[in-house]
Image: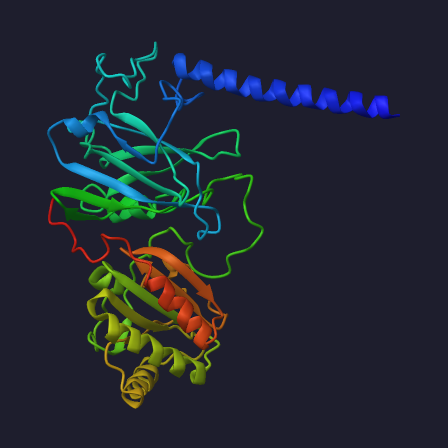
Amino acid sequence: MNKIFNALILILLLLSLSNCNGQNNSISTQRETLSKDFDKLLPFYFKMPSKLFSEDRSPGWKQNGTKILLTGTVYEFDGKTPASGVILYYYQTNVNGIYSTNPKEPRNMPKNKLGQTHGHIRGWVKTNADGEYSIYTIKPGTYPSRDEPAHIHISVKEPDLENHYYIDDFVFDNDPMLTSRRRNAMENRGGSGVIRFVEKDEIQVGERNMILGLNVPNYPKKSLKKYVSGKKIGEDVSSFTPFHAFGPDKGTKTCPICKYGWYHGILYFVGNDPDWIEIRKWLVFLDSESIKREKYLKSYFVYGNDENFNKEDIERKLEELGKELQLKNIALTFVPSLSDKTSEIYLNKINQYIANTFLIYRRSNIIGKYTNLKPTQGNFDMIKAQLNQQSEYFKLPKSSNK
């Protein structure tokens, strides 16, 4: 019996080694041989160095044009756990919108027989122990055909998955070709790819955090947890126009994201199940944080009870509530329902029937989401801790560079 058992173990070990060697040989082959058809096999590994780092300078960095730094953290599917050892492959056009080739450049990709190439402005980074990456490159130009916004392609290879997959391109918020129609059509694979620049030391800096597997069809490690309310961490908050009953924009329909979306923001949604005692506690807390953090935090209460909706009654109730609590900075707003299409709040996918939904965002990108949250000191501390997590670029104003 022992001999049979030992023989089985030996066979399994040999098979494992064979599979590993087969995969390594395949990667080695792809490093040296260009794919005959990119639609069938992306040249992810072509000329990839054997050793990768969390920081990379592309061949475009040496060229004339707008210098940019793309940086951020890659997270596991939960949106909270940093993911180390993840390889990101990127490629882009030059400033003229061409995937230019350069035989003198070690990363250069010649055209295959179909005329396909990723050019020579391409590279790889591998996230460090904290999931961080940095790419120094040049801002790409728009295709000469002018049929696409300027962009940088990005693909992901996780250390424990056999196959790589693409996520949304890096695109640029100040690009006039990035219209509302195009933004709403984005897949948000890996989270939003929209880059909003700040400027430091004459470099345009854009932060993007990525969520592994987010909105990737058939992602093998997908959590069984269901998201019951709100867009996902890593996606951008969608613009909407609630009516402001109390606060700085009282009496108007003002989009919170459009006017105050640069630094931190908190959207506190309540639908058909309001608990006004708890609401009062949350409003006092959010207002005090907004006062303390000044321009770096804007908070909103968004009420959307569609049962017996009466605009005048709700407006009066919220105004009285603001005066009663002596609120200073928080905005008290409302919509006919959380699925209302006229205000476009429906784009944020808020559940009408749960106690509450909180979306915390930075640069319009969702960094925290909570539902059915009680106004306890522990939850107050949790939100404060999240707001305190700021990069060195957080307080920089929006870049004026076009």
